[in-house]
Amino acid sequence: MKQAPGRGLPPVHLWHPEHCGEIDIVIQKDGAWRHEGALISREALVRLFSTVLRKDPDGYCLVTPVEKMRITVEDAPFVAVRVDRAGDALRFLTNVGDEVEAGPHNAIRVEMSPDGEPRPYLHVRRGLEALIARPVFYELVEMAEERATPDGPVLGVASNGAWFPIGPAT
Image 1 (spheres, rainbow, N blue to C red):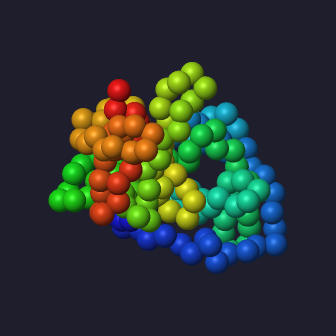
Image 2: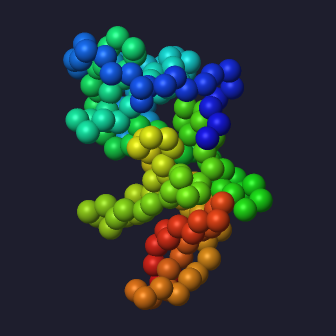
């Protein structure tokens, strides 16, 4: 994974602060971040928060060496807003500027929502996922190849030596 220019990821997986609480931050299904109901419109601030985001067994939280604050995530914390084919890799761009190549460590998965619509996701890092935006998913469908499986023909995409089913070939 490649971070947005000028930043690296802090080691949030190593931080276990004693002070824990909650903060009224919500990441909406469309990737918008809100604090106390107001949209956080400063892109740089959202990007900063995204680097200290962690998914723990008790939910999503923003973590520093001295503080852990739980937040609400309505679906996935990120949105994949672009995909490009780069050789044998599918390279995604998220709404917070991260570049992620799908592959064995960054899987693509598709769930079906209760209304029968596909909900595609990309693993970004340490259990954090990006919802693949509908136009980007349509691009994946255009790139898809059909494969025979025990359950019948399936459409899927290949990236970095891994194959990811994205839906039935009907």
